[in-house]
Amino acid sequence: MKQNGQAVDVVIMAAGKGTRMKSRLPKVLHRLAGRALLQHVVDTATGLNARRVVVITGHGAADVEAGVVHPGGGMLQFVRQEPQLGTGHAVQQAVPALPDDGIVVVLSGDVPLTQADTLRALIDACGGDRLALLTIAFDDPTGYGRIVRAANGDVQAIVEHKDASEAQRTIREIYSGIMAVPARLLKPWLAQLDNKNAQGEYYLTDVVKFAVAQGVPVVAHQINDPVQVAGVNSPVQLAELERAHQQRAARSLMEQGVRLADPARFDVRGELRCGQDVEIDIGCIFHGSVELGEGVKVGAHCVIANARIGAGAVIHPYTHIEGGFSEKDRIEVGSGALIGPYARLRPGAKLGEEVHIGNFVEIKAATLARGAKANHLAYIGDSKVGERVNYGAGSITANYDGANKHTTVIEADVHIGSNCVLIAPVTIGAGGTVGGGSTITKDTPPGALTVARAKQISLSNWKRPEKKK
Image 1: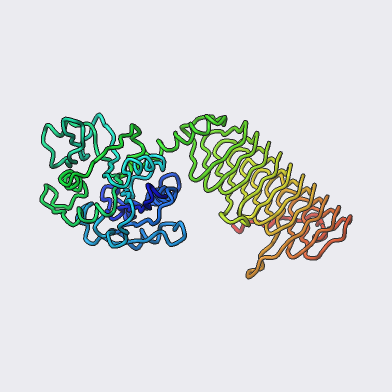
Image 2: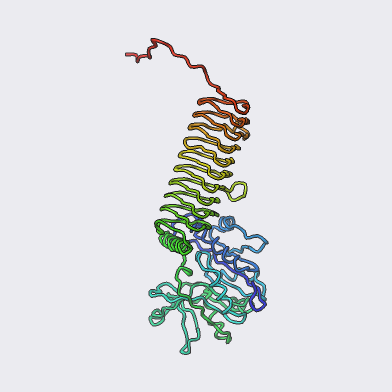
């Protein structure tokens, strides 16, 4: 992104320990909506088309740096702040990575839900020659730096809460921790910072007084959405922000026409796209990238990850659909399919139209063609199943020999009886029937009845063993 011909470089502060989280995990790696707090911020920066994203790490630096998914193109880099001597000291560590010709946007790794449009407006306010601050008014601003203005309304300073006078503490407008500033101005201001304050730290906010002294305009872009500037310092705050985010996601979907049985019991931990007349019952969780076609119904307490569900499909309660991120592992459910309850689809399951997968059936890396049915208590793995196959209760494909996976092929219109074992590699010919209780180790011809089980015998007058007294 460029503003007035200037590139945008983003600096993300992520060096803090997060003591109040009471966790060995670095604070910025705690998850919100399925992603690390820091990942949300990196993704937002990527959405700005930033020239580069510089993440300042410190506590748990190695884990933090390993825990971020890189956007690619070499735009993401890390610098370390050791020891941690304040926000100003943190940004000082990023100076060597910042070209003089850019606008620097400073973000915090524990403030995950700032929207890209808000940052674009802040960059516009900077304009390449001003210091722009993102601000908001709180009824209770305790703990936040206050925006001090002159009589004419111009921003004069940011005063941290611990350094503020009683009069300054009555100010409701606070600094969010987010700013946009030309790098050519920021660098000399950072060089002037000192730690003569109540905390003994180098405050980034002191750059405001340097700008005022130099005659550089300081502008405030004020928003009224607290979620966008909310930081996470404790498990309680993390849970509150999670619920606020999920309520927004729920409202957005309902405004598009999705019917949610209870928006308070609904979680999207990735991206959910819905067609018209989709219905979702309580307690459902969506991970990764999920598409629900027109008229899809999802029952209570389902977990769906990385899947495309075709129009008119019904996902009955307590079903787990666990697709992977690659196209090969992504799950496909055809239109009109009936899945569950208590079914499990694992990576690579590809189900055609009007397929029925019932209770306690597991499908893995298998394709089932139109109209195939496995209605209860079955396993189909590494298989190709033809149209209209009926797969009996208790039957499984034995696809693993202890070292390698092998494929089972079940051609169209086959009937597999109950409690059968199909030992791969094996092909069941079209239109064939496998008698219940059979263990199949060889290919079967089309149209044949195949039975492979021990002969039944009955012993008359047989007595069960008795316990010794």
